[in-house]
Image: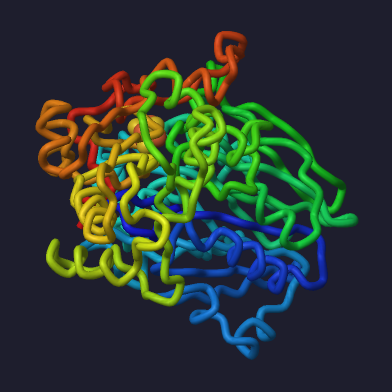
Length: 470
Ligand code: SF4
């Protein structure tokens, strides 16, 4: 999962509760379950029906919200956000939810994703006199909504959303209503659930389980949900288009106990491991997975091959977040601290090392070295997703193309650089089959643009990648 040891990071997670006296506390627990989606900033906005209060800061949710701070957030409704910040994007102002106040009331906005036409819209807004306070796309949307302020709020939001392009799940709140929207292709996950009479909204369903809520359904592509004291109402701000949910959510980002689009992430990863074995078998004595996100795929590979699954690699859970280390050298030291090979398991053995994906390749090289230093006689690297060759414009920091090992090397060159005896990746077809089990032609089919270069939306000439924002 993000925040582990890869150069691959999610932009954020969002969670909200409408209609519960402990909404802030529940939002805290929900965000805690989504912490893997972003560890550099967290915020919660509450409403008591008349007033809205915002509280946010840098760090983990538990660092930002000690109990006394949480207790000061009163109200029946809350929206919260955890975020991953890219370099040059760590300012306090960019921590979400963003809060906007005007004479007609407040609007809190939490966003997961990335807009591909934000640069052009910012230029238009500034030319028309708007002054933007943050570098975040989220503020652009708030300005667009405000410019339609003569309309009822749901229509103003629909109008604002109709002008933006890219990947987004939005959670917004006024003093007495909550609004949830998913982009016309449903690139980022967002679901609703309920806890008694209260409605809950989450980037991932695992957060519902944590607070004892029941999952209701995913928010559909192009759908705007309006939640208030009368219940929940569904509207459309865009005609339905085939959903292209991010495939990397299944491969790496989401927690294995989450369901995406009705499909459990752990089960999908196991099927990826099985498909990987069918495509790329290896003669070996043990199968091991790189903790934590690759373990499900490794179990699937082991089951399909009949080779025993073993804990050949152990993660030290008490090492800090390595991905914020600034230099390559420090990142590699971080990997060393975070993972250990288990000599008693791998010594004298031919090992299949299953990993979910490869970004720069430095982590894989280090892990192969660890296994060989611990006595593995052969290391066969099996990657449970296709080679990442293209940048993501939809909110995932995949590094620049120049840093992506698969964008610049042949398979044999990668094998050599990583130091493996053999290396194979899952095919795009194998990945789609594992996720959708032949159902993708009905109404789904994931985004696979970082593997194939086939982007499901227009990419504008000035589209700014998440890690290029300053
Ligand atoms: S390009 Fe890759 S990481 Fe980005 S949304 Fe598509 S599948 Fe996900």
